Length: 461
Ligand SMILES: [Zn+2]
Ligand SMILES: [Zn+2]
Image (cartoon, rainbow, N blue to C red; front, top):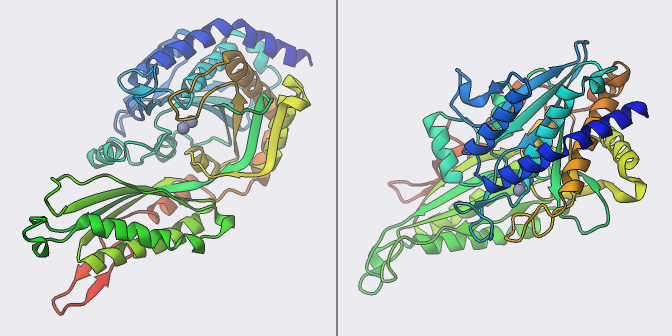
């Protein structure tokens, strides 16, 4: 109990820095892999506290991106817990407080502020670490939101990054090597009268860029000379819609394509139409299975109209799975903090959204804790961290107390959770190999000289 009080006092003492950081980050929103202002601000603050950082912009083996980590060592052997915060904002020019068209409409600004609070407590109140063993890795990660697919594809082509998502990139760079458990908080605008929430998990996803190519021609005078890429695309989406009843409820499949528009005048047969989408599902097997069917439908439509079709599939995020034993530990911490009636952990609830925290839980136990106190719609134009006290001071305290519960008594709880967890992959390298299975980048429809049409639905070997 005494230790708990020490931690709560320490968290209270850095309230000012946390609120200041939240405001600065809110006022300097930048999207994934361009979060340089937040990165610089937090690096300066962490270094002023005396931390030595491993910086993703100074990694000699990889391209320069925002993000960093540092280890807090208890000096006693034991597992490593990674507590992380996300840096990126969204393109949402309609938000009244957007800056250069961007805003923290997912509340990641609160995460950066909480990380600074935790870093401050661990440095300035070393008594908090007494009686613990192992290490706490504090990590700021870029690019959680899977947006700006073309920009990220370009970064991949240039070799700056290898993956669309920041945590996936960090896993591939080795920044999670030696980590045994992960923890993060996320602001939530939950209308329920609770302060903390957590569900069983969330869908995984992959990204698709689907390009139909036809032939431009005079739309009135000579449509017979053209091949209409827009018709092929809409027919493709119709075929995909006709598959929806074959999706099984247990797989929570989501396919939400958008047409990117025709780049020609109204009196021209459109020669190109791009469709972007994700395929989301609760497990990787379903994601691959349904994606293959959707690709066949898209390709069949191209063949029907006589179009070329290029499909670029990229791994997005793995399903996020919260280990029940780990959930129970965090739930108990939250209940001690705010009372049983203000905590809502649902061990059966599955969400259809996706996060690259799922990639972390594919290789180690991890919990994404929802801290209520935001208002408006997530990713909406009215989103605000309306109650910074509830979101951030609660969040900071819960993460610190969770670290203590995991790492005290010879890290008995951390060791037990890590030993019993059955991750989707036994190692990060196995996970990275599986990611490749979700990639395809090729022309799909082949018109042969004898008039046959061949659909290529697997990556070239
Ligand atoms: Zn988001
Ligand atoms: Zn978010």
